[in-house]
Each structure stands twice: as structure tokens, then as C-alpha cells.
Image 1 (cartoon, rainbow over the protein chains, first blue to last red):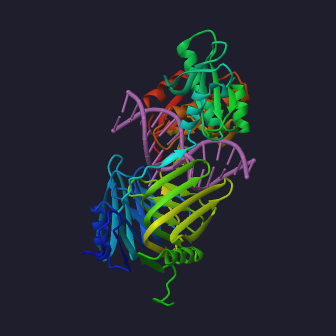
Image 2: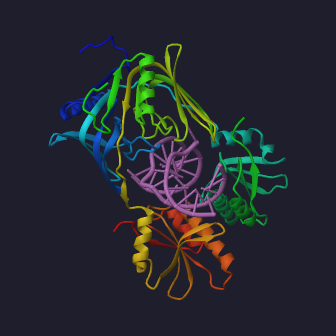
Length: 248
Length: 248
DNA sequence: AGTTGCATCTCGAGC
DNA sequence: GCTCGAGGTGCAACT
């Protein structure tokens, strides 16, 4: 079946108002060929696993990926209304003249079942995608910025380690200030709330226990901004805040 | 254009290897009719907003929703490689014979641009979906379970309030034990780590400050299970753990 | 609009 | 495999 000159990654097949069997065959062959497949129609969805859910009849878009991912989308919201994470297997069958898609996971044991009353579209898309996403403005960028220019935190700050381990987790940047006091820095790429203060507090407490020096460890939260409540909590705990963006 | 007897929510139109103009028209009309639309083909993606990203040429599946959501999927992973949250607008154009989709958001200012070199599929799906998801096994279920049967936490525990406010956030369940001591309970629907211990600690500290009674407030973490490190931290802080599932 | 915390969070890195 | 924390987290509830 040579529809057009072969070009890697350019095979697309779709069916409109397919029979359940035709839809099944297309989805199966698409997944077997390591492609992404889709179906649209009226369906019910049941999920059982880490939690349980049921979803009554409605029109939804189903996407299956060869890595076991399943996504059920309606016409609103960014998040799928139901899903299955990658790692499992898809089973596509016709039962009582209805297309039935099951996505199965083990550890944790989870099943997602989509039963179609009607299918108005089925598609199979082979994907060639070598490109990698290049993302900037992350916490890692903020870290590099500080390591490059430590005085952005405060003059005479000297980083000594990153990801320094404590009994309760790793400290983003560990160093000493101009007076030789130990400093623990927690980085956030965006505005922080009370949770980030609690996180820094945990690390500072752990360091104070582990180092058992006289001088208390300083804790500095570095982020673009901080909420009022978090700032009050921070002050109460004797911690500090420095405003800094991940950019440039 | 009456293709088949009208049935609400059953209108599906797709094109294979459409011209950029035909794809644009289909996507635009689908969105205008409050439908979900899709396109597949070789494209590059650029994002600028809370962070910045670029994605080189590759075959991807684009889904646009009438609420402004945009999702770019490859053939692996549950999460889209690029996206736009709901709330913005889509602009669909043909530039230099290429389909160009821009999804724009304000506050925060964000742009997602998908430029197709080729389009092998375009689809428009009208969606009728009245059903609501029914989900069980959530933290709310765990809360109700405890309020119904407080002795699951410990005999003679008496809940007095839920979501009781403190200066640092709300306590899931607030009550008293058999000795009349104040108890703060933090609930988690799944296995907990150090972050949950820190959260409970914050609330207990706040209560001890605010109540300034002689008797220390008890803090109990209720979850299906707890990691080793979190359990050690919990003990160090004088807090307690009770194993309990959200189920039944 | 801003804040806060849950989520079937997902994902990657480290162990 | 588990643990831990980041994420352009998304999302609802509440102020």
C-alpha cells in the first residue's frame, strides 16, 4: 500500500465514522508501528487504581501513545479528564459491537477503560521527532547565575557546594558569608509561599543539629518574590530573603 | 452543508494532507463552533512567558480547545512537550505558505507559537459532554472517614473543627484527645515524605505560639504510609504518625 | 487578582 | 525499585 513516496515520519492515516472493527485495526496497527493514535466519539470512562473514578456518557478525544500513555480530553481545561501514565499496555477490543480501549499498568495496579458507544474518528500518526526541548528560566539557571555572581546574594558570599546533603534533604547552595558563618540557600524560580520557608527551615535546623557549632547557620531564600504570610513566617524563624530572577 | 442528520455533539470533520489554507479554515471554524481541534505534522515550537523554550523540527500532534488551551504532544510521555493554559486566545494564520498557530495569554504574558512545515491531518470535533467525573480515594474522603469514625486516629479523639485557620495556613482536622490536649491532624491521601512533616510542624508551632497554653499541642500525620527519613524527622520533632487509607 | 495547598499530580535524578 | 524535590506544574477554594 504505497500511498505516497516514503518519508520517515510522514505516515498519517485517519478514518471518519469507522466501524468498531476498523477503528480497532487502525489503532492497533498505529501503536504497533510506534505511532501515536487518536479516537473521538461518545464514550464512558472508568478508572481504578491509586484512586477510582467514573465518567458518564459524553464526547471525548482519546490519545494513546506507544509507551502506554492514555489521555482522555474534553473541550475544556488543560488537563485530561482521565489518563494513564506511561509504562503500561493498551488493549483494544470490540465487545458487543463497541470499541473498548483498556490501558493497564502494574505497580501501581491501575486500569483505565474507555467504552465507545460511537466512534466518529480514528487516527494513526507516525512520529519522527529527534529534537530536544531547550528551556531557560529554570531553577538551574538561577543556580548558575548565583554561582557565577555570588555577590547577587550578598557581598562576600562564597558558595562552597551545591546539593549538599543533610539528614532531611539536599541544600541548593551551601556556603559561607563574610563573617565566616555557614549559609544555606534555597532557590525558587518563582514567587514563594510558606512551603518554601518550611523547606529552608528544615535544612537550617538539620545543619544546626549536624554541625553543632556555636554560630547559628544562616538560611536565605532566593526567589523573584515572596508572599506576605511567607515573609512573616520567614522573619519569625530568623531566616532571610533575597529577591532574584532566574533570568540573565 | 448537511452531511448527515443533525445530532448534537456528533459533528466531526477531518482533512488529510490539507493545504495550509484548508487546515486554517477547518481549525478556525471548529474553534468558533466551540469545538476541539487537532492538527498533525512537522513543526517547530517556540514559547515565551514564565520561562522560554524552543523546540526544533519534528512531527507533533497539536490540540486546541475553545477555552484557549493548547497542547503539543509527541509520541512519548504523558505531559505535552509544550502547552498553553486556558484563558487566552488562538490565532491561526497562513504565512509564507505555512500554517502558523499562536496561542496568546495575558497575565502572565505568554505566547506559544507552532509553525508547521507540513500538515498531514487537521480535525474539528464538536463536543457534547454533560457528565461530571466522580472520583473517590481523595484526601477529602480520608477526612470524611475520620470525622465519621474518629477512633481510627485514636480512641477518645474528638474532632472540633476542619480547616481551622492559623497564621501559617489551615489545619486539616483540629480536635482534642482523651486527656484534653489539643491535636492538629494533617492528612495525606498517599505515602508521605519530609515535606508533609514540615507542613505539620509549621501548623503545630503556630498553634503553640497562638494558644500559649502550658500543654504542648500534639501533631499527628495521617497517611497510608511514611518514608524512613520522614519518620525519623517526625520523631525528632515530637510528632506522631497514624497509618490510614482514604478508602472505605 | 492573589494566596494557599491538593493532585490518580508527572518527571528526572540519585541511591 | 524507592525517595525526594522541581515544575512554564494545573486546579479549586477562598480572601
